[in-house]
Length: 314
Image 1 (cartoon, rainbow, N blue to C red):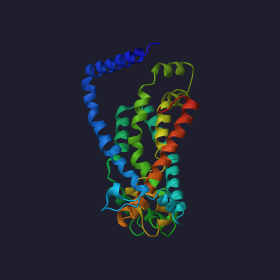
Image 2: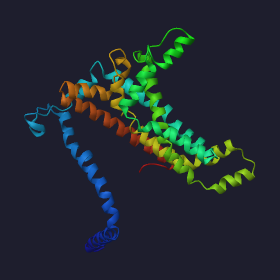
Image 3: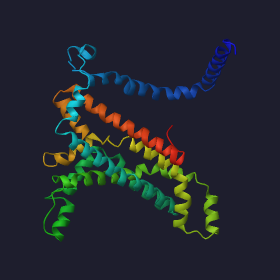
Image 4: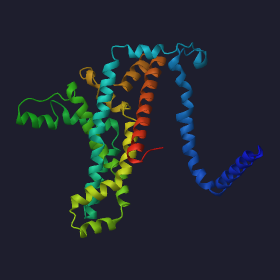
């Protein structure tokens, strides 16, 4: 084969790519702001990750600070808080996945079976609305409803059993309150993508199933669920990739000195050490460790999904 043939093929491929870009220039123009966002706010800041391997000194800058290798990682692994942080973060993440992931699927399947369009729209509106509440408002509502003195739930408990429960200061209740309120707030919004997937299922399959005498539950199990299974798997992979990325704001607002043993997670630890104590290199190392674990989980679950069901992100 002549040495010029690869160059000719490469030139032909470049020409085809340029023609495709020129033909669809408006589509590339639309995606340009998205690409710029990720480059500026996601990829460019990765330059600063190197401070996790340095003793960062603000006056010397990132490049002038001395390298220390894995010193900050070793400090984190050997710290008193390490296992508590891992246990709490992983516990909330798994709890949230086990409870919060299937609920939107069930809600979408139920809404899809509602025959009255007016009632269906009403249910969707009611379940979507909590998504638009800010985290501060959401936590404020939790405080109001669960207050030992004035909370409506504790008033009911007092009326039935006589002793209010200090939900917000008992470590044992923290994970359930966090996950339960999160499910209530996000289940309607998260069900939208499943409802969209359900609309793509061929209705002739349901008609054929009715002719064969299949019940509604059987049609849901054998037609609807398999029809949205690729969507479920993709979203499960994405959720597994953020298993340790438990939201900081809500945990921080719900956190107090009495429930710290259950509410202290990696993100709040990074905040205390990095922002309050000014230990930038140490907090960067902890954050990098968290990101690496999430990325590893994403790759593993994606590979398993590809082998089991031929559905994956890549």
